[in-house]
Length: 512
Image 1: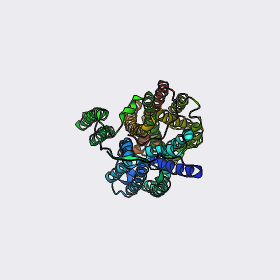
Image 2: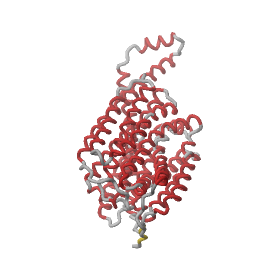
Image 3: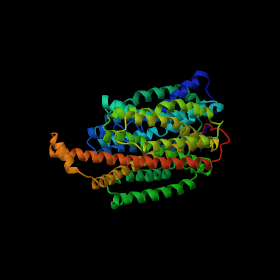
Image 4: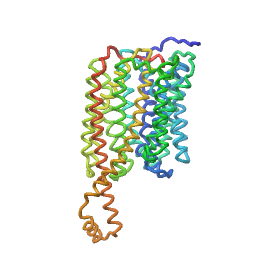
């Protein structure tokens, strides 16, 4: 096994560290942005490419799953090729497939290019994180984590705003085209500033079996969740087959990776209790948060009559206090017990979800926007402290592996939660509609009154039907938001299972 040893990367100084940090943060922001930029654009994409809105959500989940699959491979890639080379190659590939997404002539082609875009986007998150930690002095590692977490917080929030504005005013293709100049600029800047700080590399065998099992179980599970409702779940042999494949693939993956000499994913970091608790909280909290980021714009557009732009405007208020609070929270890392900060942030998210569970169909724009504003205040307490708690719980040489696994569980959790949420939303709305129809009174008198005002009989019945559907959808939305508040409360309670960290997170050595 040959090695290519390099001196440890030295922190940058002065203006250089600021410029390099902005470049790395911008890359992470762009990749995370693409997890949600299509959320409010789904109706546009579905209409343009002749598919249903539920199928249109595959544009979101296909990207998230592909990204999740390649994230834990980052440790191996960094060891084999070097962190800077992996980062630059990934951002260039991301830009190229973004261009192809915008040019896609059919929905199946778009989903295929989104998968490839996600494959390239996956390594960008952990490499940007570990490179940030390597260029910042150790005593400022909390600020590095704060900056990285801020882009992770703001990305999903800015996505609906940009996606809505671009889709309504220019065209959905441009939500992908805007990535191209950013990717080129980031790649040039990173190569210019960071290539002298390349990490050590060594030749390690490729764990093809582990990679294949990872793709098998994650892909099978996601396809099962995406197509479950369409195929009537376990009444379908396809869904049953996918469930069996996912279960066997997952168990086989665990056994293989824990016994392999060179695993593609280093599951041994799970021996650290703080890491286990941290990723549990991150997966549960981010999955719940992300699914509401998808749910609320969909509800606003399909039921309340918002355009994609105005749904994006409402969601954009999430970013106001998130941007303000991220560096503030970063400065408290190492000074205040992160478990207390984490529990406070996640409880706050739960309080906002409970607030939203009382929405009605006549809620105003500001009634929705204020909940996003409040949510933005609490998000950094979750993101910054959960990331710090997780990475500070592992050994310095395990940081890259831990960052990869953390991001894998976060993004796959988001994809799974979104599929579950959209299915549950449809099912609950159908149930509520049946209940409402059974309790309707005076339908004949109401329709007669509408006909007297000039509507035809079909128009009057159609208007009543739309009102019933709107109320059923509202009840389903409130129900899921209430469930979300319970899940947030559960996640917050887990924080106290972690030991208090004794050190700040360190830069990774590219281990896997």
